[in-house]
Length: 365
Image (cartoon, rainbow, N blue to C red; front, top):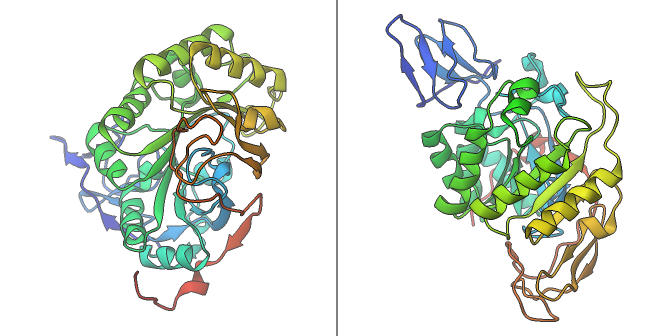
């Protein structure tokens, strides 16, 4: 059964339809029609969210898997998503969830308070809204973030940042950290492979840097022949330096053939190494490689003295040279990020969770 809640970001059109104003798609909907995201629909003359309190599954992950390398390193995060997406990426790596049009994908009933209780009971420092894009279930994510904040649990958004200005402002007021999926750095790429636009994503990045307190990192999946040219990587890195500064971490990750791009080869590790070199040459302090085994490219190095700060082997922390508040123990310069005490020891474990186990109420801290 669908869980429908009223929403705010929409308006009526002169012809009787309603327009959703959450993302730049501006879907114009007849009665009982769904937006492209599938989860926002015109029911009774208003836009409702049809998946409030329902999830496609829960799992405790390492925070580094989001990926976030500068936010409470080594700690576990309770991850979940719903169904649908507001982009149509041909290379989607979570297509079974984000492209789902079947509500039976939403297997677990999970009101926000239950999620917060589960995170606390499982020893998670944060909850991640991920797998599909949380901006399309904005009301559910915000309600959950509010419940988590009451218990001292932080919220992490893993999102493509394809969202309009007003809902963007409200959504990120409740987030403590985010990883923004910057798909590529050309309008052509966004139009051809995502049926979207680049500018709104750049607007989201500027908003996070200059108008929020959210810690954020950026991930770009490098697809051979599509968004991996040295010129495009130089332009991306230059834009980051000019608009966000050197302290926003970049993650370049390897594509593997999936969904509607099974004919494209996997990204060679050398491409990721080249991308990392280009960004570092542009002045970005912390640049990482992902989806490949590369301890050097996945570790954190002091941008001032060059010493190893956080060693990583995949998602396992193999070294630690930071003070509890994030200063290099060799030279004293602070590493940008959110560091709160010693590192966690969750490692690479992945633990699926059923929220029904956490029905019994517990008092908030």
